[in-house]
Image 1 (cartoon, rainbow, N blue to C red):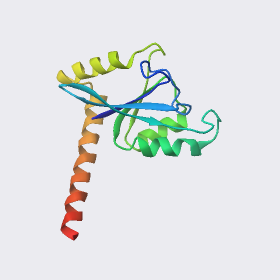
Image 2 (cartoon, rainbow, N blue to C red):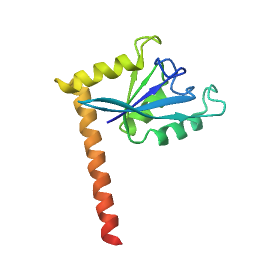
Image 3 (spheres, one colour):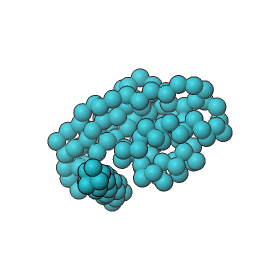
Length: 141
């Protein structure tokens, strides 16, 4: 599953979702994790009340299961949840991405909490929908 982190330095979870200029995306499995890519966003991201600034982020995160942030507004959180992406607020801006990823891998190996099992099920359902869409496209060709 893909996990995203709002980060200013690519080490800590230290960026507000709406203001983040960089979001790092990792692939996480029971075997470990791997950095995939950094999403970059430009413009005046600190302008409060500008809901349009969220659209590129929401679209870019479409295949992520979880995003960790230092802070997030209620509207942005609701929009993520509507897209079946779970926003999680870091305990502090000193939380390190690598530590969270290591704990997440260990949690996946054991007995994930209900919220994570639900997120995983949604992720699996999305993948099934994509597989079905690919099969339908192939049938049309």
